[in-house]
Length: 602
Image 1 (tube, one colour):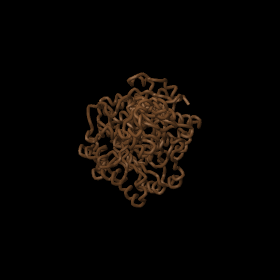
Image 2: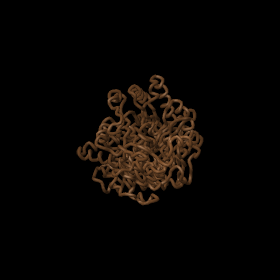
Image 3: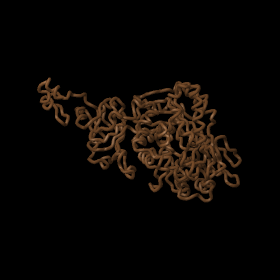
Image 4: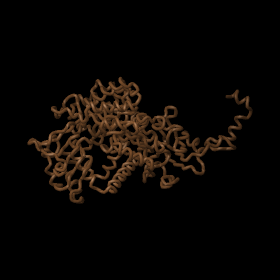
């Protein structure tokens, strides 16, 4: 450097005269930059970009990141029209992606009776009774979220820990009641709902479903998987009697509630698992009108014949300014859920040895669907929870990859992959199959896993994120909303601690992820699974400015403080689509500007 300066006399003097340490421009140096639309300052940014893993500030223009660096460097992008947000040290990450959810179901659940909060069956019945008191005669009472494993006492009397119908029938003798299990793989229906559905004591179990009966053979109202279909059909018949305007208003309200729920919890992209062609068409229309949430929609719940005829015409990538994409099929299910004894296992349940679960959709039908997807260049994202269901899908994928080698590059997935036989764990990496898992399920299910499977099976193959990651598999994260609250903070906490029972117990903690593995699962990994890693998943110049701002550093704070962290801001395409009303209380400084200006400015 000394020799170079000798060749250009006075260079050092010129540099010192034209540039200040704070990056301010003097005498035209450094050169003036085109102003940004938005600048974030004084932030703790985890970029997930290996070339620049950390930064203090960033600038956004036209919905994309233009630069990251120090406050001094990024202030050079501030112009007269630039919005500047001083974060006072808040933690900034790439926008969190909900990798497995059900968008419209989430919105609808927010309009239904919440039966997830009651501590036991008696309280559930009380909630239903209160809803009946406000309902019109004959109006359906729809509830969501009960999970018997979380109740503080077992109903008496019961069958398999599930209540008998007397109390619910007495609480709602004339209004049909449909209460969805938290897993989505079973319901409790009262006598009036069973009557409308044509289900009685002599109704046989359907393929892929089971009617729970008492010792005398009477139907109790608990219906597992496909056995619930007639009740849903009866409810849909009721909906058809409502005015079209009312139905449309309900649908729009459900979407609005779902989107607000997601962006309010830091979610910038939502992977919607399994929508019909009709709903997909409607969601595309809504995206065209403008949504503050990016949607990645999988086609699902259709017959192989329908897929064969129409799937190709639904391929959509980056519609509505990268707010709507369709390039996969899912979540058609191979089995049920652990909580309803319907997850499909190689061996019987420890607490019910005669049961091995249910094959809900025939493997032959799933195979036909997967082959159609391979032919059309679509992803496949099929549901499997039990070890038998996961093995069946891995075997099927492997066979199809032999017939359609190009399908290996389509990033096929297994949704949940919760319980695996040890021999199948390395097959995910070997086949290039993505494990789409939900951390929060492990902590929610922890109280019942050992009783369902026994300690050995639970330790060897239950929610084995670490084993999968160590084997080279890609592991995703999400919440399966509305099965679980879409809150990424509780999910993050479970992923890195596997703690439950209010932190007093841990579920096989050796399988916990590191903080960075969990953050990658929620951002870059999820973006990769969407074929969107070049646009999302990390913060780098040229990428979409989807950003989540947290009150605390999820990578370094004590584990016990994670649950006290809050989402302060959600940005999609460089626009603040959510700002926590009391964000100033969670930051080191005061809110620099009224967020109404950000939300309404344009």
